[in-house]
Image 1: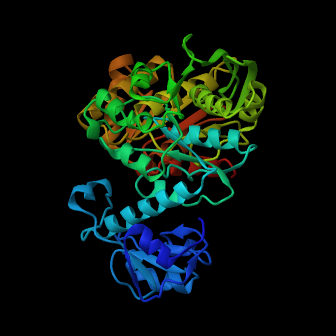
Image 2 (image 1 turned 90 degrees about the horizontal axis):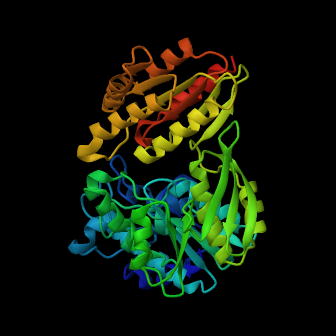
Image 3 (image 1 turned 90 degrees about the vertical axis):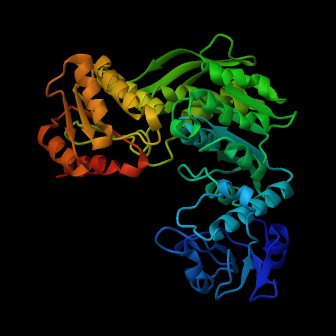
Length: 486
């Protein structure tokens, strides 16, 4: 972050000073975990379900923090954030925040992030939203732009009312590109995030069924996602997926320049001649108005082609040549954990850990990658889909899980292991689609899945593990890999 005194921060956020004359200077990072405090940093005192950050304020200062941004008076030099108006409180949702102190800190953090991003005149803010693929696309964009200048991007999926400003405040005078994910649980959320760090570029990847319980319909999701392109300035750029009609239709909602990407012949940045190798890494011809180039991705899954096209479109708009884009995309690696991490055991078992998150669209993409990898050899390898629940689907949860089970059959996956009661409709769907017997099995938890797999997986098999993040099914992948070392 740029250097600011506590007095300056208090003025920016409309707060008041406590136990300080305001002269300490914040020169380090802003953190809500005392274990990550650096010298000259600012500690965010956030209440949680189990602990309250206000209780650790003194410890944070003892660890080197210049001060604390708090919702109430603490035993340390602090800026006390003003209360959040009731009409804004729903924009700042924190579990365990019964007194509104966390909401006050988050709104103050948002104001501080807006001030800093406005001050950095050479900073280009790039926003990404969509029902699936945000993190992978963010990682690709960051790597494609890094040869041009310093890039700040969030770790993992840090994309809400806390992660968004926290990431923006990583920017310094040296930062040229700020790449941000924008998530939403309802109408107005993305618009609020765009106020925190106004984007110059906005990319909408797709409109699926993630968060369907909050929005009510795909059209409602499209309305919320489109808030990103509505926020763009006239000299901005909206990158839209030409292969998704709900996304392509957002072109009329922005005053910015529109660049369409996809396999659709109408796309301005297009992929042709897509071929997958034995680990589902795609090669394709990048078609642009400035010429063509051959791309060979190092990341896995055919869905990465669409993500790569978004990164390519942004880089091209920023002056890169098609050849430069192709080279940078080819060098880009997987960055975030538990996202299509493909590991071969010594005995030939391939484990695909894609368990960081799951929604119907991302599960379909992962299953297609599994099928592609299994069929890349002759004879085909035996394939396992180990799938847990997909969260936040509302009334469509049973239907969506059922459809995934049916897709497993249609893709000719060898075995399905359904983990957890909430995912059981996958098991039922597979039986109804294919009259399956022991090809599909439902188990109560991760431990039961590990026991089953360790007894039945054999050399040469390919095992995909995927579920919503809360279920932590990457433990299954880790157990399989550990077993392969014994």
